[in-house]
Image 1 (spheres, rainbow, N blue to C red):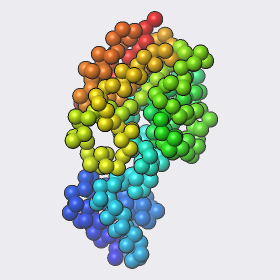
Image 2 (image 1 turned 120 degrees about the vertical axis):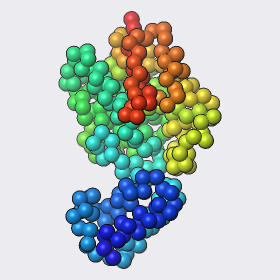
Image 3 (image 1 turned 90 degrees about the vertical axis):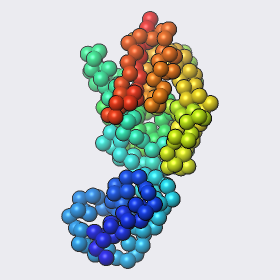
Image 4 (image 1 turned 45 degrees about the horizontal axis):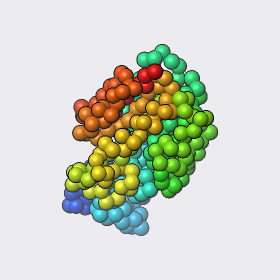
Length: 290
């Protein structure tokens, strides 16, 4: 069987099971089965595929047909142009979360500061470590502290930081939100606190994609009594850690703009809502006053 025919067979089965982004999944899984990149598939469509490799490919296709995300099958996801290891212990990084990185870089530029400055940054609920690692790549003198309540997630994040060359800039800490940093050593010393926290409430579970609801760690995406409750816990801690003029940058759900903004009243200024590419409010930033 030629590569072209194998790809068609995989795509056909994915479409029969109504798998989202079937064309992309068919390609990524064939690349994974062959340990090759996309250019190889397109340059060698008539290359013969041994039966054992075809069987392995169709096993991966069948796994995807169960609803298991492609990223958990391959163990990889790109974020900010970097290749991240992902496992079922961590939320799969989304393109929308890159707006957090963009927001931090925009704020630095707006303030006339250099990316070479020794910023101190905390990331809350780090998961795969995609946010602090991306920031470390952009801000080479920054020191980052990344927290997560899951030891398994922190193990993945630590491996990513080592593989991507940022381990020396990031300290990974197991704790709830920022509780481990609320000590005299850290109070009032951070330039930024960033987070993509869980924000899905009980009444929104039916709207969550099956792939997320069944396969991604619920601890990382929500199932909260109210989607905004974690921000209500987080922002008072952020206030204690930020310098005067420091900024908080958080991702929000599609309907969380007003509830989250309402929590950034006293003690905050320059609140800004940034939409994603679909025009949906995605990131909120605010600067600490006083």
